Image (cartoon, rainbow, N blue to C red):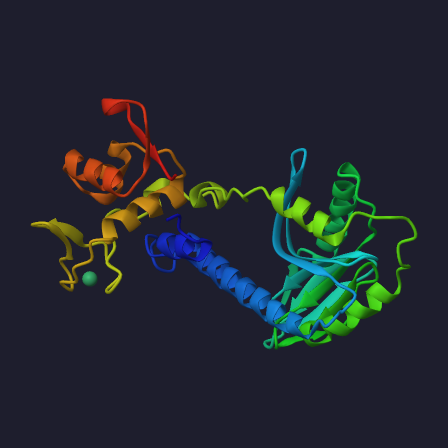
Length: 311
Ligand SMILES: [Zn+2]
C-alpha cells in the first residue's frame, strides 16, 4: 500500500507552488529517480546476454547493512572466482572523470557543466563494504566492481583509474574480462547458492526518510486537501457515500486513502486522526476513522490517543 518513491515525489510536487524552488528541486529529483529506474531496467535486460555455464547468481537491488552502515547495491554478480558489484548510472551528456581531483562532471548539449558525486567512489565504497560483509560472514570470495552508464546519450570522455567503467552495451564483455582475471578457488569455498541465500536473508529494507525531512521543505508550503487524479486539483470532497471532485466531477473512492498515504510519505508516521483531518480538510473524525480502519492501517493506543501506521 505504501507509495513508491515516484508516487511520493509526484504527490509532493503537486502540493507545492508551481515554479517555487522546492517545486523545481523535487521535479529534478523525480526526473532523476525515473531515469535511474529506467537505467536499471536496461541493465537487467542486457544481462540476458550473460551466458556463463560455470554457474553464477545475480542479485539485484541489494539493501545490506553492517553494524550501522547501510548500502544499496544495484547488482551483485556471484561466481566461484569473484563477486562483482555492478552500479548503474543513467546520466546523459559528455562525462568526465578527473583522476587528479577525483571530481566527476557532465557537460550537456548546451555546454553547461555540472559537477556530481563521483560514482566510481561509490563503487569503491561498496567493494570495501562487501569485503567486510563477506569477512563478517566467513565467506572467502574476492570482490571487484564495475560502473555502468546506461544512458543512450552518455559519452564517456575520460575514465576513472580506480574502477572499471563502461557503457551498458560493453558491460557483458567487461564482466567476462574481470572474471578471467581471478584464479579458480583452491580450497573449498561456500557454494554460490549458500552465499546467495545468506545475502537474500540478510536484506534490510531501506527506510526512506519522509520527504519534508529529506529535502528540508517547510510544512506551510504544502497545499492541503484531497487531490483529484484527473484534474490534479485538491478539490475532492465526500458527496453522499462517495468521493467526488468538485472541479471535474470524477468519482474516485480511493482518493482519500491516497491522501493519507501521501501524508505518511511527506511527514512520516505514525499518524493521528487529527493529522489527517488537518491535512485533507475532512471535518468529520468518524469519516477519517472509518477510512483508517477499513483500509487496514495498524492502530496503537486507545480512543483519542490512537495512532495509525502502515502495516
Ligand atoms: Zn477533478
